[in-house]
Amino acid sequence: MVLGLLLVFFVGYLAITFEGILKINKSAIALVTAVLCWSLIIFDTPDKNIVLESLSHHLSEISEILFFLLGAMTIVELIDAHDGFQNIVDRIKTTHKAKLIWLIALITFFLSAVLDNLTGTIVMASILNKLLSDQKTKWRLLGLVVISANAGGAFSPIGDVTTTMLWIGGQVTAMNIIKQIFLPSLICMVLPAIITNYTIKGHIIFKNEEQSGLNFTTNPKERNFIFIAGIVCLLFVPVFKTITHLPPYMGMLFCLGVMWVITEVIHNKKHEAEKGILSVNHALRKIDTPSILFFFGILMSVSSLQYVGVLPKMAQQLNEVMGNLNGVAISIGLLSAVFDNVPLVAALQNMYSLQTYPTDHYFWELIAYTAGTGGSILIIGSAAGVAVMGMEKIDFFWYLKNISWIALIGFLSGAAVFILQNEILLK
Image (cartoon, rainbow, N blue to C red):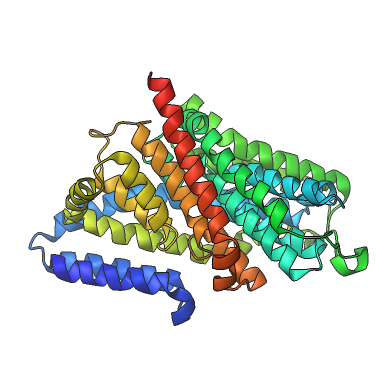
């Protein structure tokens, strides 16, 4: 049974990795893989109740992540529907090349920490598409956006799915992950920004106002209010957990409810057709539901491997091959450039117990950094990269030639800073 389970998981994993070639949505593959894995388990187990109890336990843990993502995505869609991100457009347009590059890198870095790296990337890609004419320049800046978004998401408990998983799973705490990972993540963004400044030649050409096609659905007052309210709500989630000790998804759903009330009050005098796209109902229809189903499928698939005891054995072998925790963590970062970082981190959470490596252990912090930033090395290695690949049709090999080496320098430099930072603190 175990061999059959591993075969199903491996085939499903490969199909997810080569989604672009197969032309089959990875969410569909993940769901099929999850159900097949647990079906093999229950068919091979005489006492079905034991399997069902374990399945319910894993569903409970995974649901916390899914409801957290559901709330976060809806709040971001609300901000976008109210043109809240126009505030960023207004501040980013400059004819000075170096200034523009640093603005893009810094805004993406901090925006991704607050929203999440996928959303931050989509927002910045949309903005650059409205502002820039030259494709090569835009692609280079989008490469920097991917690197900056993943770096910014890594140090924030709500900035990257893998960091959120570690936070909800109890491997890290919000304030400690920010404190320990912020500097390595910043270095991971700063060095690629410096290199990008030298790789972009000549002046940057902007589209004129007519070409940019900016159309507003709200007035400036509503736009600014919803933008500020949404950002404050997202920042409040870690504070809510600290105060109440309730799980993060409770704080996120509370903030979604608050935003729902705010938008209902603001638009209650408008005609139904006018306020339609500005409502939470519309935002819920626009969120990336396939991604939520993908996370469900892949996390349930990984939990099946935990159930049969495969993951602890893999952890032992990985330790023996790499020899130390730094090697294990950096290997996971490099692997996340090829494989999706969500199942990698999910597997690690089950491979290494909190008894062996307790909350806020050095290992978990380094994993948060490497899994979050390693995906930038290839355009298929992160949700941010896949998003810009789909939106702007960036070629895989163009990215490999022009961006991958820059991302690798940033990734390794940040990892070195983290290791050095911790060695200094221990002395």
